[in-house]
Length: 247
Image (cartoon, rainbow, N blue to C red):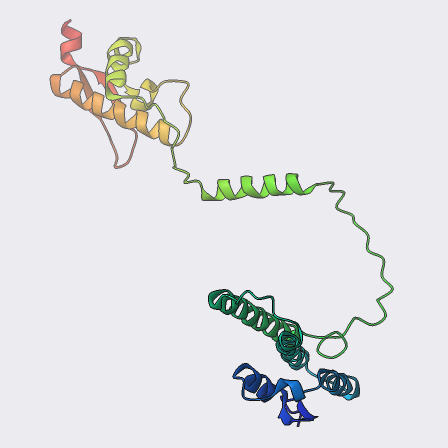
């Protein structure tokens, strides 16, 4: 099982790299006795000798080694005479720790990505097929988007049903027509003979027949005409009434 710690064997210290770094930060180990060259050599030997070292582990070890190198360089370089601001040093340390976390997160993300040839495989020999476009459509992306948006607008619009207005033959029209044509008709005439000639079949004709019947009943009540129906559901006959004869 792969260990997450880089174990070092140096003069003055034997143990994992992260422990050495913590002791150096707490000034509990003598960095004068630690050979940075030996540390780097052991680090490179582990990296080169390992068949498969996780990227995040290698990044952590590299950052730790860089920290130790920086700490020892402060011991070797002469002092500038100006004491370092504690707040500035803390800000630098916090920024580097944030960078370390960023590197770790990026390494973990890259490690979880599917790898070609391991998690995913490329397609083998492609099929020997010839694709022929018979649609004869020549559209660019802007035209396609415009057509899609237009279709969406039509689908989302609320369409209200508005029936076509129709004008029917009214009772008043039938009354005027009966009064005008009653004297020119034979003695007995069918009620349908008083319907307009230009009527279409269906509902307009039935509406005109109903209006003419109502008008005929009104005139029959006043005595202007006589209505007669000899059989059930038979034709309705119209004759001029006594009041019309007297006039």
